[in-house]
Length: 304
Image (cartoon, rainbow, N blue to C red):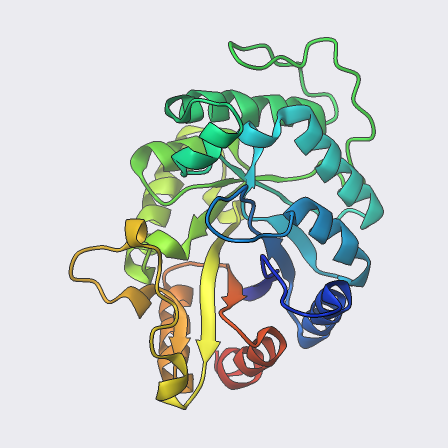
């Protein structure tokens, strides 16, 4: 199992770029394999633009794969999204994974002038249009909402055969079918999953992949938005790792799905995620980013 570190959405530091560059550099040296970031337009809390931030720290990322988890391609637009991903792939020597999804917040669609009810048909087209731009030799795409006909797009990235496109899904049947149909990998979310539900979703995804003529054994996955706070001082993490209200399930402990707890508790959770078939976890420190990244690797992951 591999691990990724998620960039904080806001930095309360007098030198934010220095702080982030140091975090990324140290995470690479600790053995983290992925650098991820979430994409939101608000509202409700201050956030740095993740595209700008990821580009600013890319030079310090060493060998890590860079994965937006997820990028809101419907709201950002297909050509600008493809241009960002392809440019970042060139600048990093081919280390980008295009993690994409529609997003779930209706207010975000409203503030960019789009209808939230159209997000799924728009996303289906957007994923196909994105592939037509990033994959050399792919046919152009023309749909109801998007068209890449006549679009000259270069460079398409540095890696061969192309930048992989991973589709985000919380695990519904429609979402998993979409992953199998449109993706090169699956991004699950700790916001709405447990190891047991992930295992069930993975089994269903494998059946859908076979229907698409794809080999489940070579289809990667990762679980993102995994809140992290590990401490043997129980008072330090009380109230942490709580998922948003919309993601909570009746009767289910909110911390059941995230990496918040004592060393032994998080070690047990990690074993459950591995046994469920999760290939990577993208961890989001709740606070004390660098200290938590180090503690997890040395006190929890080392026991795997």
